[in-house]
Length: 495
Image (cartoon, rainbow, N blue to C red):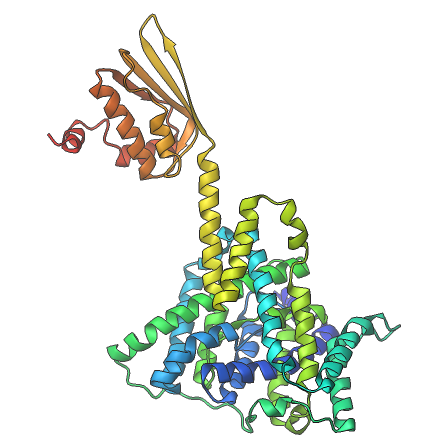
């Protein structure tokens, strides 16, 4: 346990501290913007980002991953805040946390194995596009100074790592933010800054129990919002964990992450913050800036609050152009450029799943809808493909007038019609043997197809014998099949 503690917290102290500062700087305008989206005071998003980042650094299942207030979650809160107010949002945040903790104990995090690589790629590409699109308002109808600052910031981000000695020691996004702020203050440029995003809080968060009536009516109001927030939050967190796993070549505990996200959201709700989840953009910034351990997430949360309360006079001077440059770097680094090159090499079904995921996420700005569409489409393609790997061959023993059918492959809802169509029910034979030793029956649709085949042969006057069922198939056939149960067959045939 001591070795694990050292590895998670103190194996990369300098890198984690510096990357945490970069993340904190980038979190502030986003937290304010997400608060505005949700229709609440900017301090709600800032308190949430502080609480969630600090708590998740202790209880999360993925070191180096950043969790805070997010746009995907904020979009789901708009109607609740507009119709019922902040107190109901805090109550919904607490219930969201309870749902996520329950999901962790039910081990729902393991369901991520059903999300195909093409869906993950589509999700990542869509998020990169959304991150870039979110910067466009800061680059629209502005003076040339903003474009110059953004271009210079990008140049610093990409060229500073090549500076001898110091280039690898200090994260280039941090250098970009500090240098661009110094230039803007020195030249007294009239450009948009963090201070223009909204008023920063001047006090520590305090314990707040939601001031709502605790009755069934309140539960019915917040339940649908909490369920949606819990699903979207866990989806984005699990997808982010997958991406950080790939970037760092390490593994994460998905079920612990579910519980951690739930605990963090409960903490956020009790301290006056809104619900949040893992952030792919900020997590990529953290990894690219050298962050690897839990200390980076903790530093991001603590430094965020310190900057807001102590360094606010300097903080409000940070030009948005510098942060736009950092986020453009994130979008470029997040997008899977190899996926475009692989379009001509990958199967058509894989490409369709990836593109549909991207289109749905970008069109709806809802990550859950995109992932759901991608998973559903991938499942349909998989079922269709596996359904083709089922064949039925036959041979006739003329001496005994016996037709032997040998079934090979998987029999389930997708291949059941093909299974039934492979038999010649009108053939005049005395005996029929259906050999299933090379087949596997997966569901009640497959069992129904077997019942149908056996009963049809018997109606034509043939004796039918089913042989070779493996143990798993025999279990489902014995439980749901009716062809060897005379009373069930009579009822099925309407007698």
